[in-house]
Image (cartoon, rainbow, N blue to C red; front, side, top):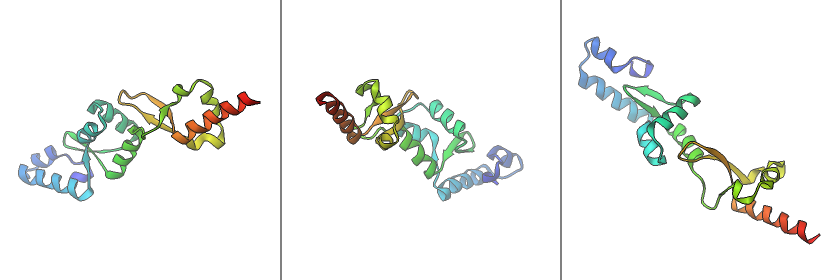
Length: 143
Protein backbone atom coordinates (compact mmCIF):
# COMPACT_ATOMS: atom_id res chain seq x y z
CA UNK A 1 0.00 0.00 0.00
CA UNK A 2 2.87 2.37 0.72
CA UNK A 3 4.16 2.09 -2.82
CA UNK A 4 0.73 2.92 -4.25
CA UNK A 5 0.43 6.47 -2.90
CA UNK A 6 -1.00 5.68 0.54
CA UNK A 7 0.95 7.48 3.24
CA UNK A 8 2.09 5.98 6.50
CA UNK A 9 -0.12 8.43 8.41
CA UNK A 10 -3.20 7.12 6.58
CA UNK A 11 -2.25 3.52 7.36
CA UNK A 12 -1.75 4.34 11.04
CA UNK A 13 -5.12 6.14 11.05
CA UNK A 14 -6.69 2.90 9.76
CA UNK A 15 -5.34 1.11 12.83
CA UNK A 16 -2.06 -0.45 11.65
CA UNK A 17 0.70 -0.33 14.26
CA UNK A 18 3.39 2.34 13.76
CA UNK A 19 6.20 -0.22 13.93
CA UNK A 20 4.65 -2.31 11.14
CA UNK A 21 4.25 0.77 8.91
CA UNK A 22 7.87 1.85 9.44
CA UNK A 23 9.17 -1.68 8.82
CA UNK A 24 7.13 -1.88 5.61
CA UNK A 25 8.57 1.46 4.49
CA UNK A 26 12.15 0.33 5.25
CA UNK A 27 11.52 -2.95 3.40
CA UNK A 28 10.16 -1.08 0.37
CA UNK A 29 13.24 1.16 0.33
CA UNK A 30 15.64 -1.80 0.55
CA UNK A 31 13.82 -3.94 -2.04
CA UNK A 32 13.73 -1.20 -4.67
CA UNK A 33 17.25 0.06 -3.91
CA UNK A 34 16.10 3.59 -3.18
CA UNK A 35 18.35 6.37 -1.88
CA UNK A 36 17.12 9.31 0.18
CA UNK A 37 17.38 12.66 -1.60
CA UNK A 38 19.18 14.21 1.39
CA UNK A 39 21.93 11.56 1.11
CA UNK A 40 22.39 12.28 -2.60
CA UNK A 41 22.41 16.04 -1.91
CA UNK A 42 25.27 15.50 0.56
CA UNK A 43 27.20 13.43 -1.99
CA UNK A 44 26.77 16.08 -4.71
CA UNK A 45 27.43 19.01 -2.37
CA UNK A 46 24.02 20.58 -3.00
CA UNK A 47 21.34 21.86 -0.70
CA UNK A 48 18.39 19.52 -0.31
CA UNK A 49 16.03 22.21 -1.64
CA UNK A 50 18.06 22.63 -4.84
CA UNK A 51 18.07 18.89 -5.47
CA UNK A 52 14.34 18.54 -4.73
CA UNK A 53 13.55 21.35 -7.18
CA UNK A 54 15.53 19.58 -9.91
CA UNK A 55 13.99 16.20 -9.08
CA UNK A 56 10.44 17.55 -9.14
CA UNK A 57 11.04 19.43 -12.40
CA UNK A 58 12.20 16.19 -14.04
CA UNK A 59 9.37 14.10 -12.56
CA UNK A 60 11.77 11.86 -10.63
CA UNK A 61 11.60 10.38 -7.17
CA UNK A 62 9.03 8.79 -4.95
CA UNK A 63 7.73 10.40 -1.77
CA UNK A 64 7.59 8.07 1.22
CA UNK A 65 6.55 9.86 4.38
CA UNK A 66 8.35 13.21 4.51
CA UNK A 67 11.35 12.11 2.45
CA UNK A 68 11.81 11.83 -1.31
CA UNK A 69 13.60 8.67 -2.47
CA UNK A 70 15.33 8.13 -5.80
CA UNK A 71 16.03 4.91 -7.69
CA UNK A 72 19.62 4.03 -8.52
CA UNK A 73 19.04 4.90 -12.19
CA UNK A 74 17.76 8.35 -11.24
CA UNK A 75 20.77 8.81 -8.94
CA UNK A 76 23.11 7.90 -11.81
CA UNK A 77 21.46 10.49 -14.07
CA UNK A 78 21.80 13.22 -11.44
CA UNK A 79 25.39 12.31 -10.54
CA UNK A 80 26.34 12.37 -14.23
CA UNK A 81 24.66 15.76 -14.63
CA UNK A 82 26.40 17.30 -11.61
CA UNK A 83 29.85 15.75 -12.07
CA UNK A 84 32.41 17.68 -14.08
CA UNK A 85 34.95 15.11 -15.30
CA UNK A 86 38.63 15.59 -14.54
CA UNK A 87 40.45 17.66 -17.14
CA UNK A 88 37.30 19.29 -18.51
CA UNK A 89 37.27 23.10 -18.55
CA UNK A 90 34.49 25.66 -18.82
CA UNK A 91 33.97 26.72 -22.42
CA UNK A 92 34.49 30.41 -21.54
CA UNK A 93 38.11 29.72 -20.60
CA UNK A 94 38.81 28.95 -24.27
CA UNK A 95 37.33 32.22 -25.55
CA UNK A 96 34.11 33.34 -27.18
CA UNK A 97 34.89 31.81 -30.58
CA UNK A 98 34.92 28.39 -28.91
CA UNK A 99 31.11 28.41 -28.78
CA UNK A 100 30.93 28.45 -32.58
CA UNK A 101 33.71 25.86 -32.92
CA UNK A 102 32.05 23.32 -30.60
CA UNK A 103 28.57 23.94 -32.06
CA UNK A 104 29.71 22.23 -35.26
CA UNK A 105 28.60 18.64 -35.64
CA UNK A 106 32.14 17.20 -35.90
CA UNK A 107 33.20 18.75 -32.56
CA UNK A 108 30.06 18.18 -30.46
CA UNK A 109 31.38 14.95 -28.92
CA UNK A 110 34.01 16.98 -27.02
CA UNK A 111 31.50 18.94 -24.93
CA UNK A 112 29.45 17.94 -21.89
CA UNK A 113 26.55 19.82 -20.29
CA UNK A 114 27.09 20.04 -16.52
CA UNK A 115 25.56 21.83 -13.57
CA UNK A 116 27.62 23.28 -10.76
CA UNK A 117 26.61 23.36 -7.09
CA UNK A 118 24.79 26.68 -7.48
CA UNK A 119 22.54 25.25 -10.17
CA UNK A 120 24.14 27.16 -13.05
CA UNK A 121 24.59 25.06 -16.18
CA UNK A 122 27.31 25.36 -18.83
CA UNK A 123 29.27 23.47 -21.46
CA UNK A 124 32.52 21.85 -20.37
CA UNK A 125 35.14 20.81 -22.92
CA UNK A 126 37.16 17.57 -22.82
CA UNK A 127 40.99 17.57 -22.98
CA UNK A 128 40.83 16.19 -26.55
CA UNK A 129 38.47 19.01 -27.51
CA UNK A 130 40.78 21.59 -25.95
CA UNK A 131 43.65 20.22 -28.03
CA UNK A 132 41.57 20.27 -31.22
CA UNK A 133 40.56 23.87 -30.55
CA UNK A 134 44.17 24.96 -29.89
CA UNK A 135 45.39 23.20 -33.05
CA UNK A 136 42.74 24.97 -35.09
CA UNK A 137 44.00 28.31 -33.84
CA UNK A 138 47.67 27.54 -34.66
CA UNK A 139 46.80 26.26 -38.16
CA UNK A 140 44.97 29.51 -38.94
CA UNK A 141 47.95 31.64 -37.86
CA UNK A 142 50.46 29.77 -40.05
CA UNK A 143 48.51 30.27 -43.30
